[in-house]
Length: 343
Image (tube, rainbow, N blue to C red; front, side, top):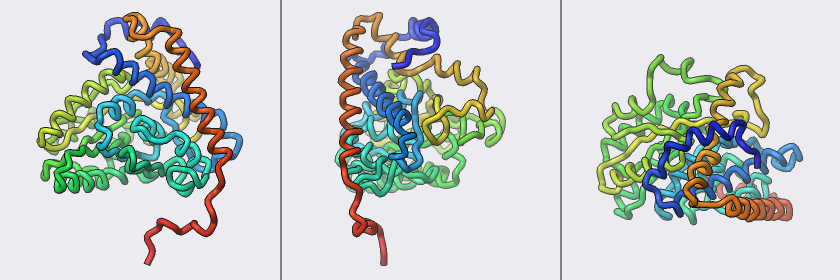
């Protein structure tokens, strides 16, 4: 595993932070989940040049804390709707890693039968309802599912992830308004990584606008938090879920975070000039995994030997998933149109 550029900086950031009242075993589970996401995505990046993963892939390396903190707080039967950058959401909700890697390889054993690729993941058995390549596309679907859940009185919460650019789509505003009007059990989670592809917020929205504040204008409780602090994410999600499960309607949370790699693909793209090296390094110093590690180790919640054993087990799981994908067959051409809605 790569170490942060400045370990001292990580320790400085972590020294005054408590565990937010989170039990140590929960904090360790968050840590392990983030490690798994990181290992899977680093492996994708390392192998992408082999040309066996022929679909576009959007990595969330650096953003792992949001997915881990949100999904660990949810119930197993709660429903999650993803984005085009949803490996982390799928993994954190308990999706099958073998099936995910096989899907990226376009194999029949993939979670979408090899027909969807990286941006179209689904695992209904763990409540991961699907991801999509269209910005903002899952927002109205999640609100519709929440409406169904309320009618069925099954107690499920619908959580929908989206980026900062999705709130600029009209469908977000329509969906937010409808969710508040009908007091639907929806958790809106905005992962604000500062950029819509290569465009920063300042060229897309008026100066000084804060996403969570204008979301509050629709009449739902809204808050923001540090998306690189998994414990803070977990704590804030619990508060939001308490509100939703009481029947008080939707809740909106915006988390500030940052992707390390290029918008789409396995490489780094700082050379394009849309973000500075200084900005990139400052966020990398706030590596969410290293930050949580620096909170756990001094408190004796985990040892370095424990971490090394965890990493060995995760690496073995990741290697097994890629081996499975390599061995799996491609879909039968006769099944190309199975599952499509046709007249």
